[in-house]
Image: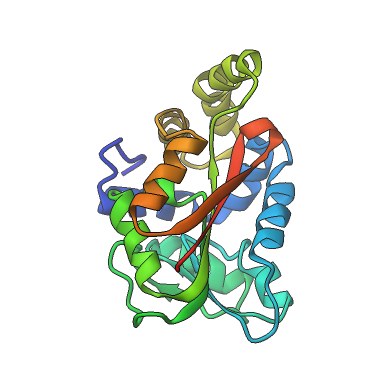
Length: 230
């Protein structure tokens, strides 16, 4: 399996990420033109981790999003359903508590976490609404959800350029840097089909979250959504 289809069959998505796990972080840095560290820093600031805070980091991959949460003293669980990603994460960051978990059926008790966060992974679930509901189930009352995801650039001329980059340049660059460039064809297609900021906020609200808002990064290429389990 080289890439998943847009129906996002879980087994296909997991196999696709297994195939790109070894160079995933490096290729993402290249394709984002070095912006991933900035996006991660902004997401961490939104989470505001502190000692004693319990955080579930879904679709954590190799743990690059979990590491700054751990460094801030939070008790973070990096969770993913790709064995390849978990293996790469445990090798790179053996001090983190990597856990295999499906975002649609989390193996955690109700109200277990102060924060549930997912960076660039909600888009890959086969049922976004169920994933959002499961995240709410395991979040404590008064706790928060933080979602970092590719979104829709707010400046229309730039949005046109960006979409052309996604569909043409991104797969071409990936073909020279990734062991599985077809996976990045899926990436481009999934970003293009993803809801914009307001539409995603509406879906989060429909899943039972309150006080939903977002912050645009890089002109809306990425948006960080935050909500409360009230």
